[in-house]
Image (cartoon, rainbow, N blue to C red; front, side):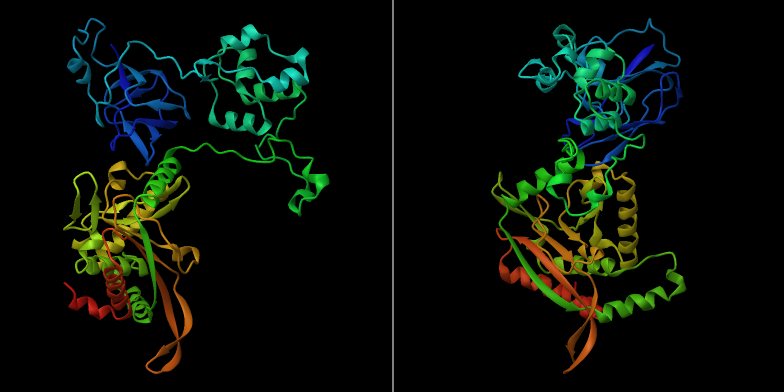
Length: 458
């Protein structure tokens, strides 16, 4: 029996996902729980396991295509099932199909869905008038263009190549028909209308003079497509942008700074690195800051709270889900260390290392990005001393940790070279007043200046 697997609800109310890569192809035999594909949501790249055992019949989406939740994604010829099996008689029966991630939206129509049509205001995409005006004898017949109202079938590299050459794939599709457009199709069309094909390795050929300061003579040599690069706003970048705008224009941000002598902390870390019993653990300054933050939040609960506008309440958290900002190729994400206040320094160090490795691999799950009560951004790894971080939505505080630098500093009445770090705390002034923010920052600084003070905090 042919069974369809529809894109499930991947959590957090996400409505769509982009297919990053398929790990199976039509005709492949798959087992239950075998990974079928990697899809990218607005928050993370997620692996989709197979809810069936059988043979792949059809892939309903191509790599690079965005699929709505509930839309057919892949079809299987299920082992041990016959075509005589009863069809679902109700919406509840239909939803009862096995699904290891979530059921998703109920299907509204049977059969393979049509690809997303490229329309403007419900009409087919217009013909490229620039081509018509420049070379009317090369213009595609209007009837052929009118027939191409769907998004042209192509891969992401081919779409990028066409964009670089300034070629509209709708016009190419009108010539090649319903098959998948290839790079050679784009190059052939570009040559026919007087364009230029890019080198085979997809790297634009630029003259040596282009590396110097542009002059009117060499600047005019660039085509419109070469003068700028356009990158679609989607995935993690799109979600991060929306979240930051919401936060910046909802919560009144205040940022305070404090420069800390962390020589004692660095000495402690040096001694821990020399301890062979800790060889399996990588304990760095960020882990110590995380521990200091967890301890300090116990004394300043306003920085571990959220503003519930709908309920007219301030919600104080009695736990710390600590977010650690991570810069990835797909954009900024903030995975969480759950119940961080319960972890030892070694536990926090291991958690920070694990979060960083998973984030760099692009495998952070939506569940690991949801929630959070307070966040840390380690801008010191980029050699930056201080900044004004923006609050993640729903949080009242975020701490930016600057680089550790050896600087002349007053120490016991004399000038000495000390290891210094600047802390930047942004907080929501609706929840936290200046005195409470300063007290929290001073508590964190005191622990970093004298790690033994952690024994005095509860």
